[in-house]
Image (cartoon, rainbow, N blue to C red):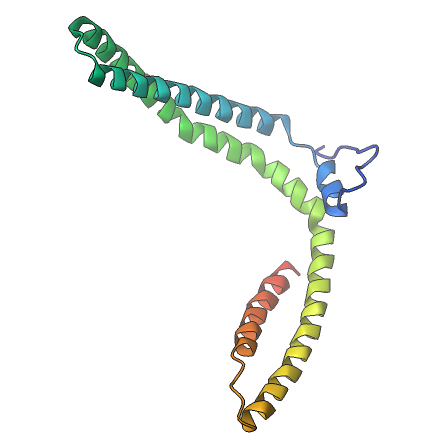
Length: 170
C-alpha cells in the first residue's frame, strides 16, 4: 500500500500537501532515483577528471607525463562511455518504478482536483459575465469616440482556453 499516515500535519501545510504527503514513495522508486543520482555523480567525477587531464596535457611539455595522461584519458573515455550506456536503463527503471506512485498520487488528489476545477469554472463564469459588461461599455465608449480596449478580446480568448483545460479535468 502506498498510503502512509501523518500524525500531525504542519500548520502551514495546504490540504493538498497533506493528502500528497500521505502517498509514500515506493522503495523501488527511491532505489531507482538513488541509482540515477549515483550514476550522475560518477559521470560528473569522471568528466571533471577528464577535463583536468586534457588541460594538463595541453599545458605540459613532459613527454613521459603526456603518455601517462593520454592513457588515463583513454581509460576515462571508456569509463564515460560505459556510464553513458547505463543512462537509458537507469531512466527506464525510474519511469517503471514511478508508474504506481503516480497512479496513487493521482487517485489521492483526484477529488481535490475535481473540486478545485469546479470552483475555478464557477469563478470563470463570473469573470466572463463581468467581461461581457466591460465589452458592452467599451462598445458604447467607442461609439462616443474612445479608443477600443483590445485587452478585453484577448482576455476572453485566454478564458476560452482556460475553460477547455478546466473542463478536461472534470
